[in-house]
Each structure stands twice: as C-alpha cells, then as structure tokens.
Image (cartoon, helix red, strand yellow):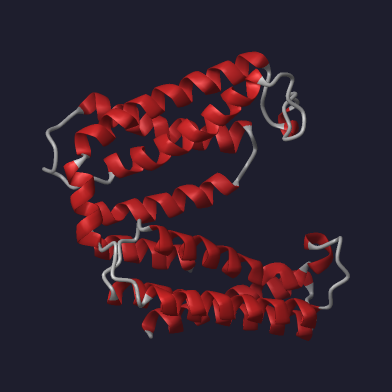
Length: 266
C-alpha cells in the first residue's frame, strides 16, 4: 500500500507539472492521471504477486509483464499530445482511455495468472546461475568480443544512424551479408549487456577475483549503451539498461532488486 500511495503521489505531481507546462485542458489531465492511477495499481499488484509466489524476477512471465506495464505507464502521457503520437488515427481522448482500460484489464488478468505460477522461483534461478557460472562467464567474453567486432565492422562499412549522417536505416541495407553483421551486433550487444550486468552484480565472495573478466563485462555494458545512445541516437537503451540492471540485481539481493524496480516504476 505504501508503494501504491507513493506512486499516486508521484504520478499526480508529474501530471500537474506537465499540465502546467503545456496548458492542458481539464479533460487531458484528468484522463492522464486516471491512466497513471491504473498503472500504479497494476505495478503494485505485479510486485506483490512476484513476492507472494517467490517468483524469480528474471523469469519470463515476470519480465514480460514488467516490460508491458512499463510501456503502459509511460503511455499515460499520450493524452497531452494525441495527434503527435497517433497521427494515423482520429481518436478522441475518451476512445483512447477506453482502450487503456481494456489494456489494463488484460494486464490485471495476467497478474492474477502470475499468482497461480509455482515457478521458476528465485532460489531455482539463482541456483541455476551458480551452477552454470563458468559457462556464463565464457559466454560473456564471447558476447563482448562479438559485439565489439560487429560494431567495428559496421562502423568501417559506414553503417550507423540516419540522424548521424550515415547510410544505414531500417530499410536501406547494401547487401544481404550485412544483415548478419547487423543481427550479430544486436544479438551480441544485448547478450553482453545482460551478462555483463549479471557479472557486475554478482555478490562478493561468490567467485574468485577476475579483474580481466570484470573489465570485459564493464566494457561490454558501456560500449553497448554508448553505441546505441551516442551513435545510433536511440535513447530507449537507457530504459532497457535500467530494466536489466534492476532484474540482474536479484543475484545480489532480492530486496535491492525490488527497490530498483519500484524506483523504475516511479
């Protein structure tokens, strides 16, 4: 209940601030806050369900609902700029809110289903990670090396962001062979981000000190974030990284991971 009350307080302040900046109408800020109130209830329910069933935060159903509800929460600001976000549809604010209520009902039903799950529990996932830690460490090194190699090759070929005066866009690729470099860059980059965060979040004493592996993990995370943020000009990587760090923090402490997720929702 404390998290729900804090969420309503923060979302209310955010709505009031945005409404004052854009001279929003009463209808706009009312729908915006109503949407965010639904999001606050859903977020609190998700954290409660995962805690009640001792579900691992890295388990697929929890991750799926987490990402879906983050997107749902961010969408609460759409009522202030419906034309910019949905130029292809002539939807009234009421119609958009009805759609949001329907989406909230689906997410709530998924949260109820989450309460029926018996696993994977935190203990099972963390046990699996500890059991396969040497293999995950080697996979981390391969992922970082592959990510750096693909990024270097794409840079040499002139691929980058359409916002950075380079030739690559989603619809313009010079040869089919280049698709493998693009796919490798995305795959190895995301893998190095996930495994690097997991390695850096590991509890002290769980593994003997490996400074080179720790440096590789840090480089893998940093280069992926820097490449997406500074070169590709995609700011979504900041949200993705925050989600991954919050989820992988469970390997260190479940309470820390839940606090990071709560902060992320706020």
